[in-house]
Length: 580
Image 1 (cartoon, rainbow, N blue to C red):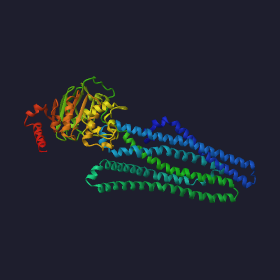
Image 2 (tube, helix red, strand yellow):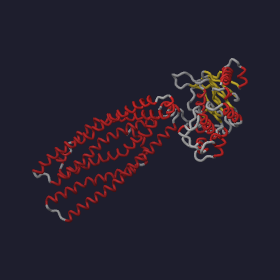
Image 3 (cartoon, rainbow, N blue to C red):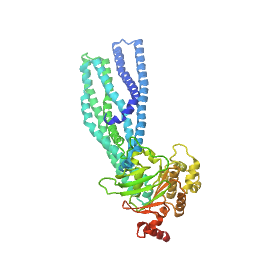
Image 4 (cartoon, rainbow, N blue to C red):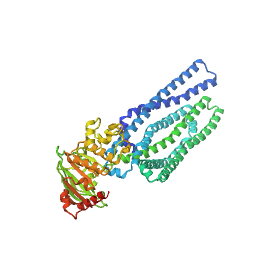
């Protein structure tokens, strides 16, 4: 129960569904258990020669009544218990997905996508089965066993009943013996399923690279290894689960044979009637299902416990970047950003990524961050967006530390175009207007597309702005994806537009045209790039080397330092352009 504590709020909310379902199931069990009593009376009447039309009619009506109770009760418990289990599946999947949305970059860098997908599919399915079929088997195993034993004692007395129940202690020992191995093997199966999901997801995402490097056979072998391990773990689970039902049948069958010989001896000596024998025989046959259910119940709950424990690991995860309990409000209107002696590293045992970075971005101004790959340019943006928190120093937005702001307030002021353009599987217009929750303004979408120089490309497509892009925008070129991403950021009309090396895939003429449009951009602008041609028009240019600001100024002042990184990079890139 400790493992399933996470779903207690749902169980409390839907407790009456479970209560009515369990009551209906008990009614069905009782109706089934009363049927042998009808058979007992009918058999004794037939043997004694006292059968008449009224007794035949009574027997027929009793069977019809009990059958009707079984039919109605079975409908009610199925709709209430199985239906609520389906609602639980929906609720738990929503909880898990919302948890994913609430976690930060720290979490997603440590967990693989395929593993997270397996939690939302296979693990939740296991929990649903446990809280659906598992509850039914629990009630059946409990009430059928108790009622059957009580009616056996009532029918033939405690001594004969105990002979018929010889299987129970042996079954208890067997269940105790296999419970822990079942849980461990169930966990192994679900972990391997995650590995297989990861393998499929990564290979499908990288299918173009696989084909371009002609390594289909290599990837097939890699998947085959994971697939074989999954089959191996499943077979290990199946073997131990398969032991249970045959063992239950064997133990139950042996106990029944002992009872059969005992009953024949009792009937020979006149201590047991034919009707009593038939009733108890039926009860023993009925006891087989609860006994089998006990084995299935153990297997089901062990799988459910293993799945729920994996889900709990996610639900109990905490974002390292936390919102303040009582957030402050930054002043409305124009936004000023200030970095004050910011130091950052990803862990205490790792080297510094940024060292003593300080700068200020005033409203309606542009800032460019230039440097080699791996010098910390994107890290500055990630810290500004609070994807990570600074190790030392502070970042201020209108004089307020961004740690004291609610994330929604912070994000609403910025529109970010990442290095790798990610488009969703929807129309081009839907991707551009992604920040609109419901409907969107097509004129505003077109204006954003014109700003990013992608309008003409879209107009030439067969369905224009309603053209559906594939997963991750695979139907568009790299440059088109970048420009659609820029249009999406522009459409949001945030106070600060951030472009993180977002013109790397466009040609020189298109880049120049977009940069000309950026000169007319009325809000603040932050550009990250490795190309001088992209940043030279910025009001302020920072050169980052080894996590530190090595140069600062505009294009003219930086070009005056002929020994500086900026001047040398500019000359080298001019030479590269001439050689093309």
